Amino acid sequence: MRLPNLLGSRNGRLSAFFFLYMTEGIPLGFAATAVATQLRRMGVGPAEIGAFVAAFYLPWAFKWAFGPLVDVFRSQRFGHRRGWILFTQLIMAATLGVLVFVKLPEQLALFTAILLVHNTFAAMQDVAIDALACNTLHPEERGLANGLMFAGAAVGQAVGGSGVLFLMAYIGFQNSFVFVALSILAVTGFIVLPMKEALAQAGDAAHQAGRGLRHALGEMRSFAMDAFRSFIGTRGAYAGVFFALLPCGAMSLSLALQSNLSVELGLNDDQVAWMNLATSVVSGAAMVLGGLLSDRIGRRVVLSAAVILMSLPVAYLALVLQQHGYVMPRAADSKAAVEPALVTALWVAVLGFNVFMGLMYGVRSALFMDVTNPKVAATQFTAYMALMNLSIAYTATWQGLSIEAFGYPVTLAIDATVGLFCLALMHLMKKPASQAAQISDSLAEHRARKSAWGIGLLCLAWLPFWALRAELGAALPIANVFFTMLFVIAPLFLLAGREVLGAGISPALRRSAACLALPLLAIYGRKWVDGLQAGVAPWAQNSVGLMVADSLIYLLPLLSGLVLIQLARQDWQILSPKVASGATV
Image 1 (cartoon, rainbow, N blue to C red):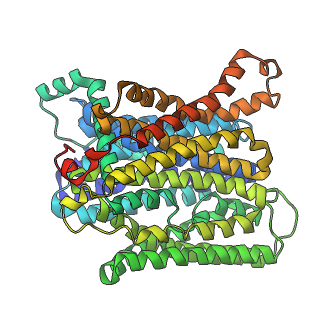
Image 2: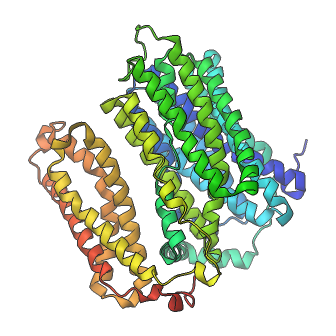
């Protein structure tokens, strides 16, 4: 039987993108719910599970970098975007298949690394799917299609989370990787393979292939410049950067903390699966309700209320745990009796939280659209979404560390408080009065200088922190999360800032900014230096390599901070309204 080309009809297109987005949700639900639950049962600590979940979300913070590659490299045989979807889905299935042979919990680091590769291709697939949707869906289909796409992702998370947990009793944990891989391949075989995407003209494809990687790098350079101008240009867009980097409400009950507590409180796999399924249904319904309410009473009203209400179930659970003396995490196989009131409190908190999270989720994206420059909408909006994924990654990391350092009630209380910080920025994110005002305003130059000064001083603050890190005790890992995020943002500012300033700065300053960016990202490897110094490899303690690495940990942030401060002193007039309005973006 010949399968139909779903792109050839309206209902087919809607169905196709529903199932394509389902392949994005399946691995997310699998990792955040099913795998996190099993790791906790194996005795893996909350900090390690938090780092695992963070690693799974991290590639989505950089998915903008895949856009130029997807745009430039194409296949005449398989189709432009269809070819990328086929390629990424096959890699996603293959990496899951490899995990069958990884032994847990002994090889958790290898397990995390393989899933990081898996999710890198999942993020790449997302870019290709969105590009295919933009070029395939008719204008009158796009609203319903987007709703179905998010619904597909929610269904996928339920399949990968609840579905896998239900099946584990019959197929076992290791075989669940095969099930998830086959679920993805089912979409590949029944949906993607029969698709017939319009092919590029042969001459155009050859021209693109000839330009190849150089053109892709040029596109990424243009992205950096456009994003920089868009973010710095107006007050609303600038506030949006920090709004995206902050958690939009409390997040603990949507990350690994929920799975950790579920296991410790004695819930079996079926009970965890039912909880995950119930929360998926509740949050999905609330997303639709949030969209309807925002149309009637305004986005900021609904979003503010949702963010405040998200903290209430989290604070409630923290109070109940504290009252019952359940503070520090317990072993997954602990024989200590668990009071039924704690299980009830967890159910109440999780269900209530997902109602309010759903209300928030359906409204937040529209707020970013308000402050996005329409001339670079795809670039700027994608970057906002990437920053939000970065906030999920670092939140998952610090919460896992905090649980082990301070316990559940303190972590929940911090999360409920920090989740409210974004409210201070929300009122600044207003749509400019005119199209010209969406490009730049009179304070754009000031924002660029202020940002360069701030990031530069934070890089310099690394020096006393690293020298005195032993004094921080349990707070050290959480502080490290902050600096890891800084060493992602600083290189991006260095690269984008030098391109925007162009010939307006000295060649030496341009070269310094370019040369420091990539090594600054490599500061992430500092954790291995500490391991060597602690005696993991005694022979290496006095080696030249270790001395060089330790010196670079100080030198690179120092030089980067000085270069950023020097950039802050440059003439940023190119961002003024008169110049920016004539800039090519």
